[in-house]
Length: 244
Image (cartoon, rainbow, N blue to C red):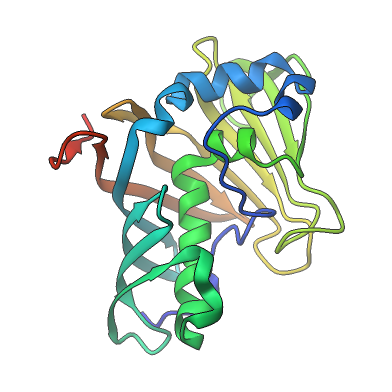
């Protein structure tokens, strides 16, 4: 399958802002946002030296593709293995904060995919870090599909900023402060305009909790996104800790 813009299934949700510690703006947000972030390991984020994972995505009848990433949050270094827009193998490393000196392929293909895949892997952290987004705790609601209820926590990006302004992630959060389901609404016209997906397959790599299994629908078409080969390297060790 050739690489195309369809690979960024949900696109680039707002400004990609990396904050390594809690800041004062977070105190004005609903307490559940911090509770979620803590559940996923935000208090140990400063100990994370590197994260690696393979992001695998499939929409029935449209595409099936995999991206392999290694990311050093403190240095901004990103390493990618996958394919270019013509389906040719690519193996590249670059610094995310230094895109102006990168090739067009990195700027326009690799890095947008990195941002997209990173949001899937670490969205509970991004919701906490991204101060451009508004967050509300709306209380208990029925899940969009299937039985059960959960706390509905919409995360909405502004209409005048980010890569796809106006995007909304409706997070459905269980009693254990883990996301169990989400309903995504794109702010722009580019498809898919709406995505429903489960958050399951929870595994922990070092201090960080990952949801590795997402099944649902993208504009009515069956969607499957999963993370594999997830591992974390922590401060003081050269060894990777695999997700279990």
